[in-house]
Image 1 (cartoon, rainbow, N blue to C red):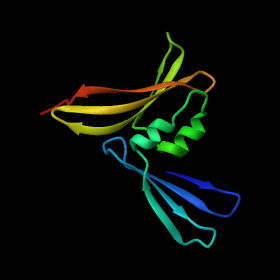
Image 2: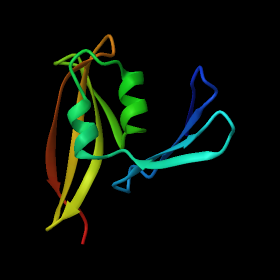
Image 3: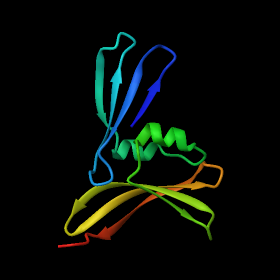
Image 4: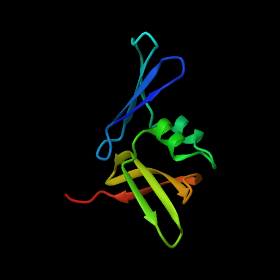
Length: 117
């Protein structure tokens, strides 16, 4: 769904499995167009890298396409979330909150009961 080109000629392709899945992949190619790495990016290590002040573009490149995007007008903030786990009747999500200018103001997790039966 997205492609990033770096100055050295390397390319990263985004291959999301959201909203239903719990993984997002980044596929890295070297300047020679040879596959270098396939990375699952929805990891605790990457969640810890999310910092206040990062841009939407930086978060998209770090975590891939979110499962959902919402705007809360009273708080004047946007929230992107990624489903990260489904177990014991609950879905767990990692959330990133952005101000109206598109910069991270906080992040966290939440869970919801699995709907349906």
